[in-house]
Length: 154
Picture 1: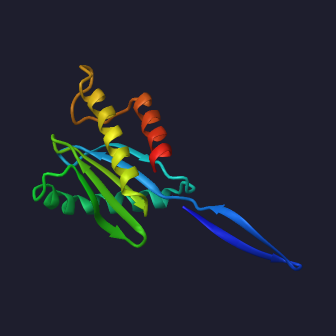
Picture 2 (picture 1 turned 135 degrees about the horizontal axis):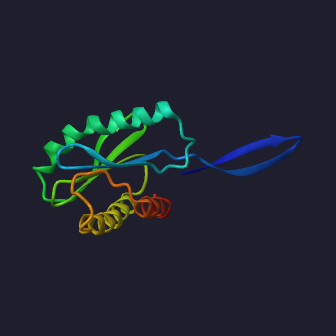
């Protein structure tokens, strides 16, 4: 998100483009409501207390997601919950794994594409014979790819 900052200095006006720090927290939750992957993917400075708040907001939205998932056949559930200026968007796989993104307002198209690309990565992890379904995803390759996708689409 960008804003324009106007500054006045001794009869000179200048317009400075200021890049706003964005908040984004991404979590993959198994069908048993266990977080199997977590990443703070926004450009905002990382603070431990905010990380806990983000986890709380995402876990609170799980009940809403559970209800919505059974009322629609769509995989991408746009905005399922809000907290102040933060929005929770969710993508539900056929196996009922939930990809949850806590973010400030962003483009729905970018979020949907991000979820679809991460779903492809998740399928590759899931099909790995050494991966136990429902266990934490600890692959550094997966983490690197998810963060690259977040920079690209979010």
